[in-house]
Image (tube, rainbow, N blue to C red; front, side, top):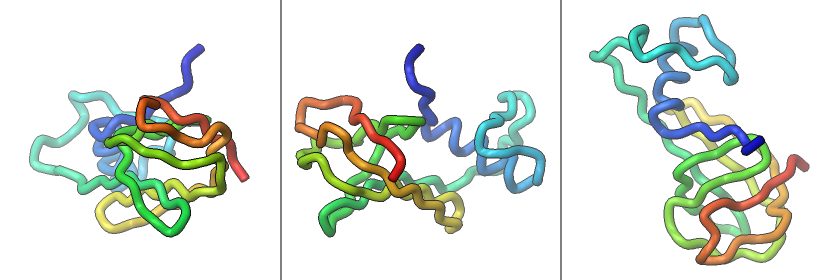
Amino acid sequence: MPPTCFSMDSLRRLAYSSARGIASEYIMIADRDVRSDYSAEVRLQLQAQGKLWPLAKMGRGHIVPSAPLELPPCDAVVIMTIDGDERRWNVRLVDGASPVDTDVRTRPR
């Protein structure tokens, strides 16, 4: 079974549902329940070796870089910011990342 991904659209829905106090990070609300006049500002980033890189997606056990990325296996931090509220996850880039990787394996640390 492939790892779960959170796309930017899914994260916007998550931010909206969290703002209403009805969801955890694992519950997404249906499209019909999302108000069209609300738009969350969502940013995903990877912090490693003193630099920040944008991410397209994140999921349990993996990240998807927005642009080519080259890193050795190392400790890192995945940062998700929704409407100014930041959440961080300490991870290990298990195999590192190369510019051709579209999916980078992680594990919690």
